[in-house]
Length: 555
Image 1 (cartoon, rainbow, N blue to C red):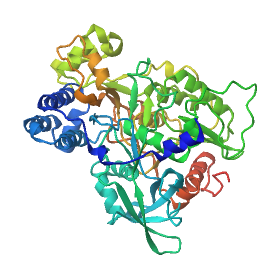
Image 2: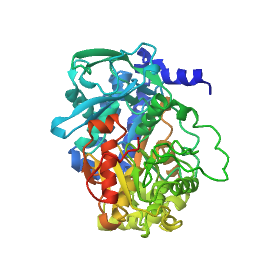
Image 3: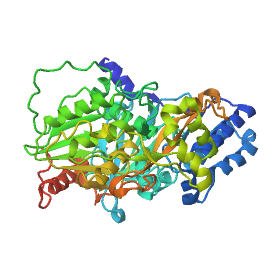
Image 4: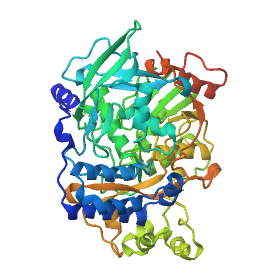
């Protein structure tokens, strides 16, 4: 890929009027969409009882009511209505994918806004700017470090709150975290495009004056790395991921580290006879750079960044993480999962053993006890995937249990087949955008007593389920009384199929909406502008004892 190719990919295309144009569905096709979504929610959606109780609403009844007026709506109104019903579940695993010309694309602005400070005194800071990703020149005064005050004339705190009302997340802080991200990055597969074609940002300059800058929304196609989970792989049904957040993660990589993005599909580097001694502060070269990175912060402390678990080969992943750990200082390790949107459950849960001598007990999963899940578990076509839940689903008919017996997706023997790879103490760091398999890793970290867990905010994002696509569900319905055909115009959906509950110390506690709490940490201005300096100092203090110092981050 040439430099010109990368530049064109980063710049993308303008968000034009076509973004709101959807393929026309006739009345029958609309009813097919509504009936399919209702069948999926009522028949297999694992969180339906909890969501009905938590939000005092019934999405199945809402779809029944939408069916009565579906034909009267415009195409955009219809798709927004379906999207809105599913968004009300506050579940990033369960989403409607409407027909759109922009499938696989992300709407972007060329900067990031992050916040720091306690909840009663939040500040919104521009942390990164990519002036090369837009055809229009960026105001030179608009740079990393300026404080955002207004968003399209609305005070920034209010603008974030408005976005939060539309976001997934069972807690207010998790919705806020996703809303802050959606100010500048939005996956167009899983929600509508921005209402506006451009935004006007009001900000405080370095000299304290007020200024405004205009930015046009652009549309990019970040793609997936060559190491990502494949649809036909052996682990395709063992995925726990927020697909929208994964698309956004990839778009950020394209915008802000294009060199790494361009190398995603490059062949793996040949094995070297010996790995060089890592230089403090420099990331170690790895063929799996899309999902993992490692560096020595200094002579004592290492830093392992788990960007994502979207990978196809968990054995190769464990091999590479083990290699990287062997190159790091052994005095202590910071395992950073902030913003990890999840991926292959096996990879997340098997990785835990690399940091502990204790036997690792994996998270357990269960199906909702419904007539449809009983049929699916009884079908010979699902013997390998669902038969283990068959007996408890049948027992639920007489016991009234809402869920089948919780069982692990990751074989406990696999969670302990390699043993410890990092000899020193370790601390894990998460935030409200750590989701899905990221939640599972955090739960395993705490419940297996591996080490301290630091949470930026209250807890992890709270994505507690194994997620399937509509195509995967349709295949699993073979042998049952229910048949789901493909939706018109390429529409689709994802659904939380198996609910996760914690094991070990947190035995039986659900992860959905609650997340995994840790030692609270509040981000600082220095964290946003100086590579997490205060956060890493706090982690260092947990590893070596004593008060946080200013030397936790390598220069």
